[in-house]
Image (cartoon, rainbow, N blue to C red; front, side):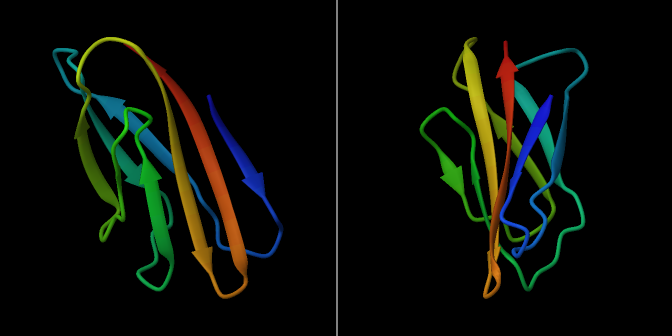
Length: 88
């Protein structure tokens, strides 16, 4: 499940993800309603984070574990975030 936290003012922070076939430690993330005017920060929950410059992101995890992924979207009006728990 993806949980969203909104201040009601900032841009939407919404993402989805899917696994590879066959299943592996690599996930494909997609920022929904991506807008290049919005600043995004994606924290993968494994000690690595990026500032995405496109809606499609591929990330490979170091090994099986539980990770909390967080996407933050911000602009001059405020910020919002979404989180998802991933278990390998």
